[in-house]
Length: 303
Length: 284
Image (cartoon, rainbow over all chains, first blue to last red; front, side, top):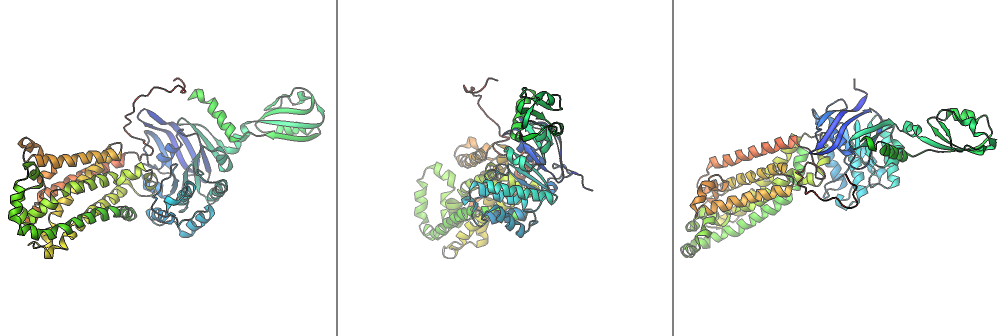
């Protein structure tokens, strides 16, 4: 029976001479999830992905992809994965269709042409054009079709939205959601937080070759501090809200408007608010970007 | 393996056409000349005797110009190892590393194809390309052979191409090995080119500078038969060339299996000069 873990990485180190790319990375990704690997340029995202496909060899540590160590049987792993490199380069003399035919032949013809046509249509790319005539975004689409066309068990996408316009980005995220619904696992790296926020079920934040946080996206967002502004029909004593779990009163005066800082769930606050006539509640949820920046600033001294 | 082999061969068709047609064109031009050279061989030999010794040292015995073997050796086979050496250095060094340096190899190597399969596919395509170039060169000589007055058969004419091909494969495998050891394709091609040129000149000068003779013994050109292979192919040097090429190829494969696929200069030797920090950089 297949393991429920798609990717398992333990204490992964990779260095190039005295340059350390990964410093003991531990990571586990379940089958059927969309995992967003978040970090700025040079954090070690691409190195991790390339180690998983045996394109580069770890200095130390253990990797298992779909239950197999990629160094023991890289062909087995690659036949079950679809990969989009971060810096995509294709043979410019081939047409889009020619490039996809070549990659499909290398895969033993496992992709069906209907799937390729469907993806090309959804991503709005003309496969008859020579690649050298295509824009960066359109080349990226060819790379994406290449990764998706054979419907692999695991998708490894390095910065998949690079060069895509917002409409195509949205369509791509829809395709990835569908892939997940079909049972595929999606592991993608990005430094664009809004993309990760929109589709990832879980997020891993990497900094200087170490994973500094892994959490469900919604938990990460909920765990963060929010600001709440409540407008009451009549003045309310702010002291009534002090002592509520996770709540801090920012406007200590009594009045119709109450400004609070809330951490975690809002259940206790809402129950207390229900005792008073409320006209309006406004909450400001921080974006993943703000949370991400928090992790980066707070862990600075640790790394 | 087949898709990678055919794809590589397709990419190298320009090399086959370019180098092959150039050699064929040279053959088509040279062979019909033999009749007039033969008719005026006495005057030609007298003229060539006045040439400096250094000149004849590189191109062989000019007194044999009146024989098809001697004529083709001087006019064609004496310098084709140097000429095709350029092809071997460029094609061999670029066989894998061109795609690596351009960033294409990352995606190709992520497909379900082992490094051995990939290496063999490309290696076989290189062998076929080199063979096709030599065959086109041979064809260029065979076409005008009937009216050339040369008393040789197409089969005999094919014989000098065998040591030529073996030498090309030797240089190509050296370039391939160096490309996987050195930090860049350009450096690997340059070093191979240097070896080829040194081989040609040391062997040539060893005919007039006797001190070079002991060194020349270690060079491929020393054992290269050229046009005289038509009189009987020396099999041992050819097999030796092929054997050394096989060893270089195996070493290259061993290296390729163990190294990282590079992107953006990863794994280079990193001969970086320590630079002074810019004013805007924070202090360490």
